[in-house]
Image 1 (cartoon, helix red, strand yellow):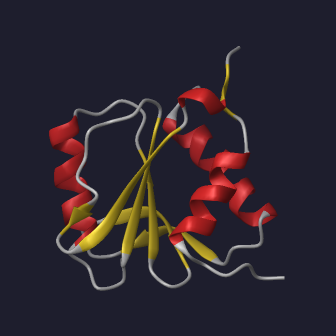
Image 2 (image 1 turned 180 degrees about the horizontal axis):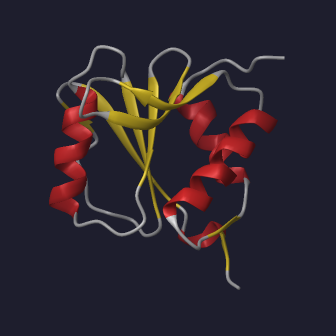
Amino acid sequence: MTKPATAENVVAALAKARYSIQNEGKLQVQIEKQLQSEGFTFSREFRLSQPDRIDFLVKDGIGIEVKINRAENTLIRQAGRYLAHDEVKTLILVTIRPVNLPDILLKKPLICLALWDKLKVY
């Protein structure tokens, strides 16, 4: 069964899981499995344009980008590039620690989901 794709549902589904962090690629695989288990329809590595490829694009325009270690100004620039595309209505930025980002960027919602308390340490 396909779950309604709202930003709130996606964030809640991602926040339910625990993750191990070795690198961005492995975290993306864990997020993909979580999205599948929660019944979301999505594309992985969705190409928005030649230079812009978002980690996930969930049905109804919810973009998900995973970033482990990036400076806030780099995250804002990348988020702005993705939100500039019509396909992305909302962007969820999945990070390890909380970052100080605006709630709205280019008149679209930008949500930061920090996984710090959802990590398994090995």
